[in-house]
Amino acid sequence: MSILVTGATGTIGSQVLSYLAGRDAQVHALTRSPDTAKLPAAVIPVDGDLADVDALRAAMKGVDTLFLLAPNVADELTQAMLALSVARDNGIKGVVYLSVFKGDTYTDVPHFAGKRTVERMIEGLGVPATILRPAYFIQNDLRQKAPLLNLGVYGMPIGSKGVSMVDIRDIGEAAAIELLRRHRAPAALPIETYSLVGPDSLTGEQIATIWGEALGRSVRYGGDDLVAMEQRMKGMMPSWHAMDLRLMLSRYQTDGAVASATDLARLTTLLGHAPRSYRAFAKDAASQWAAG
Image (cartoon, rainbow, N blue to C red; front, side, top):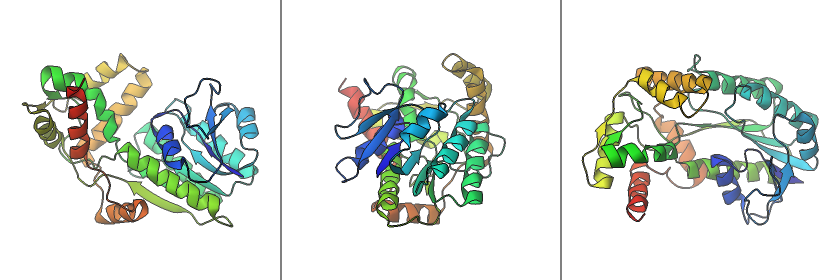
């Protein structure tokens, strides 16, 4: 029996595969480009995606553990629910589902509400799963390179309430740990839920200060203008996606996304080390940018 990783060539899926490497488990990666996908040497590419139910059914043969990461597309909810149904029909022993932090309270943010609906399906059907709820990915802020270096501005309008951002390496590691635990278990295990968060609750102003220290220059926070942010995003993504992000950032500004001490303690126990910090990420990124 094997582990199937969906979203295998993306930001998180590639991290999951990296942490699964050399762990004495057969790993399959679902990809639309099996002949050209860049995967770790021992990983077996499988043709398909979550929108193709027949391909997914074929990919599930011989699989007992599934990493389910639904793409951020307009029909994300449908794809995730169908994938869970296929997994259940296949007699899957364990699922690790990538949800989102605050999905239970940000009810007006489409991709948050969709992920919470998938969680409810897992809970309602008793699917043997680990639900991982990551906060905003620290590495998303690599997209801030140009404004940081050219303008001295941190431009992500996250507000002043605080967000406990998480490093993608911690997401990949947590997912791999839970996949292996469920894969190696003699029988299906109960549902578990973890918040994947960073050790610090950071505001826009605080992140600007961190970047200033890392870059050795003055950096200011670009402010909370969500209308301007949405217009910028429309040049890089569909309008529905840009509005979805605007709604998420609006909730960051009004409510924050701050981890509890219990969240951090449970994640530290799962990983076997403290979650990585934003400051360490910014220092590493600044060094890499300086080196060209």
